[in-house]
Length: 344
Image (cartoon, helix red, strand yellow):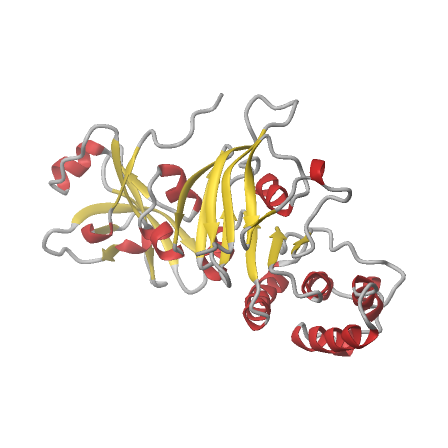
């Protein structure tokens, strides 16, 4: 059976870099999947995206879309692939042309009937009908991003690549567009790869998440497994707050024996906090309180070397107050301490 997208042993090393930007990456993506590439700056996400699009030359490896190789720039007069569209961070809109003309420009090599059909369709899907005569400078950031997305989708590509599509939007616009982009991708039945460093975006949007560090893939999994069962300390930390527990405390208080190089953590929402003593609860003092709207983070000191961040509903906790807590041991996260790629 032909795979939709097959990435095999891709590597890329820039001349001025001491380590490969992308190192022997292999990955298969199914039709209609939305996959998020996540990692810190310099992890290789954008380079991998450009390699997939055929925009830069790989040192090793191949990309196949529907069984046919995506040719590198050295094998083409013009780099890129007609059925792969990349949406850049800077929108790339023609400044002196209306929204409608920006979209029609992409369709200029097609028959007029097809142009009109696609224009009507994409303007409706991307909710641009009311602003189709506006110039880019008259649009909000969210509107510009929808136009850039419409430009990429209007020729019905097989694969859509999104490089930090929310980076230029303010927080309210990001939240709104996050919902819109998933609806648009689903409605157009487009397979998509999204590059982001925002773990909340990845968890909210993706069917699968690919976590990268120093050019290598650390983990590929569903959002739930990535969050609840990370394989490394790095993966655990980039997807939210986590308390790392000292091995001696784990052994003595939780009665759990760790293997060599193994560490254990617990996310703040998986601890229970009480103002009254309870059986099998540990005792501590409130060190700090962080208000976050519908919840609070309470930092509780339970020994000279151990403080735990605990998520609770807003309550009248007081700094210095004696409190009691319990760890949900079925939610403990066990990882190997030295699983991440070593720096060169």
